[in-house]
Amino acid sequence: MSLIVFAPMSGHSKWSQIKRQKGAADVKRGVVFTKMTKEIMLAAKEGGGDPDGNFRLRLAIERARGVNMPRENIQRAIDRATGGGEGSVLESIVYEGYAPGGVSVMVEVATDNRNRTVSEIRSAFTKHGGKLGESGSVQWLFEQKGVIEIDAKGTSPDAIELAAIDAGAEDVEADGGLITVYTTPAAFERVKKALETAGIRAASAELSMRRLRGGARGPRRRTEGPRELRRTRRGAPARVARGAGGPRGAKAPGPSSGSTPGPPEWGTRS
Image (tube, rainbow, N blue to C red; front, top):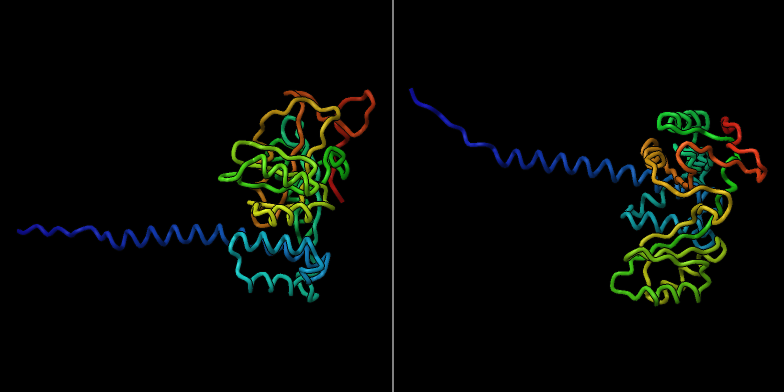
């Protein structure tokens, strides 16, 4: 009796691995493209489909190009938002609440179904130990700012800071090789263009909510709540702004400056 030995099919195994990796990459790219599409549609719906006259749309298009989104997809999103079709029902909603430890959280989402979205957002807060708050319960802790992040590798941080301040930036923070420039919403485009003219390319640029400095807040501490909340709604663009929480066991501060401690009553956003 003879023994027959078959050599392993390395080529087939290699192709299977490549196929799985490509499939995973396609899924991730699809999620990013979906998020970019909704941001473009919201910007076009609110300010029109002409990027020259709509700064928010120009910014959304730049972000989409930064993730290699095809030009055809970008134009299709603009057409859907301005053509009165399904894109016209898309809207932006802001939810407010508290993560574990009393950390104040603001979540901006794009949705075509308010009821479904509020149910999923409430579930995300509850699942990870948080509470969905009323409208205005934590908004007073934040302000809208232009945020420009710059990779300072190969460039003098002092030169970047000087160029940003000369252009009208409010604040500049350096953390290792990352420079973050903060501006008012009105000065955001001007500062961004000035940096580009000076040969300083931004790694990212967006209008975002930033925690107000000062006020009655406890020391900042790390929590996994906001990060987990971000992972819950992968299919819709959601920006999570996080404020500072109080010490362990303390209640989150309310908007009143009086002596009564604790957060306002928690409820649902209508």
